[in-house]
Length: 348
Image (tube, rainbow, N blue to C red; front, side, top):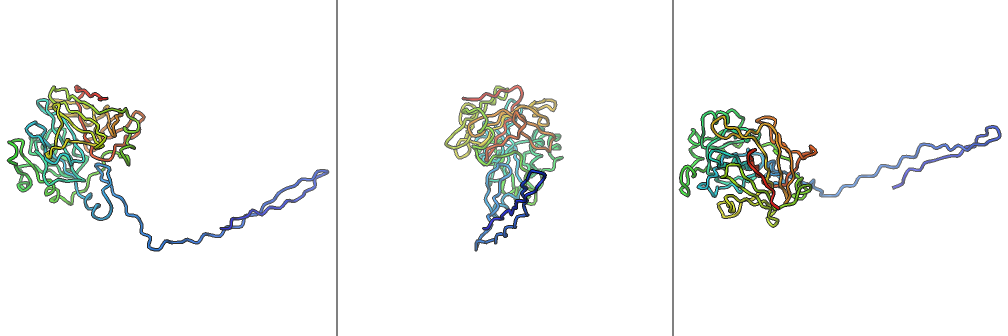
C-alpha cells in the first residue's frame, strides 16, 4: 500500500540583515482506499448462549435457545433426615437453605438449565419463601402451608402449583420409597411443560468466564471450605473444596450429604449470607429485604462481601469491600441463609 507523502518547501525570507528559513507544508496526498476482500464460504460464528442461573455455556443454535426460553421451577424441598436423600437436588441451579421450626432447615431449590423428571420431597411454604422466589418469576411448587403464607406467595407474579389444588393431580404424587409426609414428589419437567409460555428467569448473580476468574478465586483466602452452625444445635452443614471435582462438597450431621445415586452433593459456589431471623409469625422468618455481611466461596478460596436486597421482587446483590460486584464461578450455587445467632468458620 502506498503511504501519503507530506510535501514541504523551504522559503527564504530576508528581514533586515537576517535571513529566516520558513518551511511550508502542503496537504498530504490521500492514500488509496484498500480494496476489501472476502473469504469464500465464510460463516458468521454462532452466538454462544449462557444459562442465566449458572453462568455456564448452554450451547448455540435454536435448540439451546429453546431450552433456556422456558421458566424456572422453584420447589420447597424437605431436609428432614427421613427425607434424605432428596430427588433431583443435585441438578438444581440454585439452592437456598433456610432455618425452620425445631432448628431444622429446609431448601428452596431452583431448576432451569437442567430439569429432572421428578424432584422432592416437597414440603410446605414458609413466610420468607416469597422473597426468595419472587425475583425468579417462573413456577413455584409446594405442598401447602398456613393460609397467610400461601396468600403471600399467591400475591407474587410467580405461578403457584400447590399439592391438592385443582389441576395439580397429574403432577404431584407420593412415592412408596419413603414415609409420609416425606414422600411427596412433583413431576418437574411435566409441570414446566404445562407453563411453557411463562418467561425465563432473569440473571440473579454476576459470573466470571471461568472458575479461576471468580472474585473469590482471585482475591480470597485459600482454604478447604466453610463450616456452619445455624445456631439451633441441630443444623450444622459444611462444605469442603474438592480440587478434582472442581466443586465444594457438602456434609451434614458429620457425614457426606448424598444424592439419590450415592454421590456427594456439590456446588461451584457457596454463599453464606448473615441474616436476621424474626419469630413474630409463629415460625422462624428469614428477613431478606435489607443488607448484611456475606462470605463467598469459589475455586477453593473465600472472600468477605456484603449482600443487599432492595425489595421482595429484587435479586440479591453482592459486592466486595470496595463496592465492586462479586463474580461467581460458572456453575451451581448454594446460598446458606445463616441466622445472626449462628456461626461460620473457614476451614484451612
